[in-house]
Length: 161
Ligand SMILES: [Ca+2]
Image (tube, rainbow, N blue to C red; front, side, top):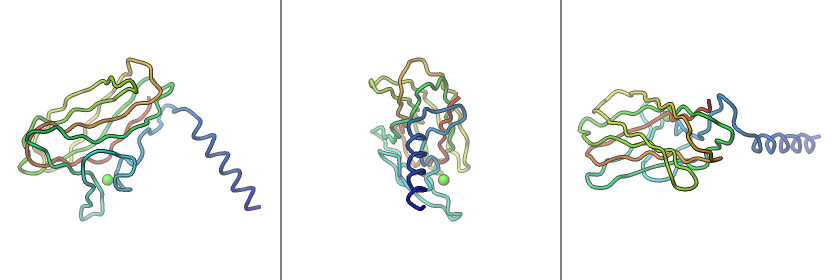
């Protein structure tokens, strides 16, 4: 009996993975950093606040652009995306802000630069991203432009529209 259940579960999981994204689906994994840096690559350190909320923190570099990213967003048959996240900065932050990129497998990408003002409180940001070219997979990349201080991010979400 247990064996049949395990087999059924496997079939359901396999079918689930083979399916394409539908409207309303979350395409990111671990966007809230509750599982540390799982699913994410690049720079940044996952930190926990006194309310046991985990977020990613980056020390901004005066000369170099830093980045972190998540690969393999399944966007087959998805027309448009909505990216949301929240951010805050250290009290001494100053800099050129960030650049958000959706990178296609060919290496080409669509980007948006966001200026970041010093903020001790979390602020939300939304980018309604209309896909202009066909590709089945995208990488979401966040570049931290040159500056000083620290930027923190949490609750990334990419929803298929
Ligand atoms: Ca979090």
